[in-house]
Image 1: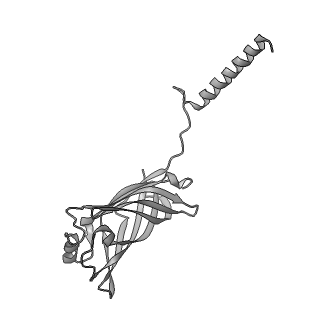
Image 2 (image 1 turned 120 degrees about the vertical axis):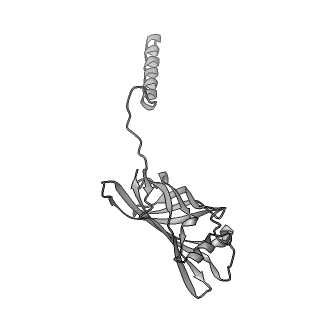
Image 3 (image 1 turned 180 degrees about the vertical axis):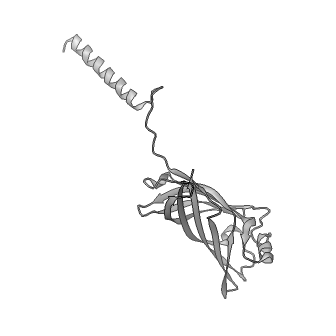
Length: 205
C-alpha cells in the first residue's frame, strides 16, 4: 500500500472517530430530547389517611388514625426502579376518638410525641409490575428507631382533579411490631402487632 493511500485511510479513521464523539457528547448551543423521568406527586393531606388496628387485652381490636400526613413520591410505571417515596406522619395527630387515651398515647409511655414528633418513611428501592402493583423497600423511623421494611403498594386509580391537575391514588396495608421500635410498654394489655392501612391521594407537581 502506497504512502498516499495510507494517509487517506488514516484521515478517514480520524474523521469517523471525531464523528462518533460528537454524536455522544452534548454540544453547546444544540438542543437534545430530554431523558424520560418519573412523575412526581405531592401528597394531598385532606384526601390521604393512616388508619391502624391493635389488639386490646386479647379480647377485641382498637382502631385509630393519624390526621396529619405529608410528603411526595415519584412513579415511573415503565421503569419502577426510578421511583421514590418520602412520607411523614405527625405523631401528635393520633386520634382514637378519646381525648384521655390520645394523651396517654402521645406520652413517653408510647409514642413520646414531644421527643419523636414524626414517623418517617424514605424508600431505598422500588420494584413493580405492569398491573400497577409495586414493592417499596425503605427505612421506617418510629420512636427514634429505624428499620428497613418492604411494603406492597397498589395503584387504585388515576384521573383529573377539578382544576385539571393529574391525580393518582395508592394504598398499602402492612403489619409492624411496636416492640421492634422500642415501644414495649403494657404489652400484657395492648397488642404488640399493629396493622396499618395507608391511603394516599396525590397531585402531580
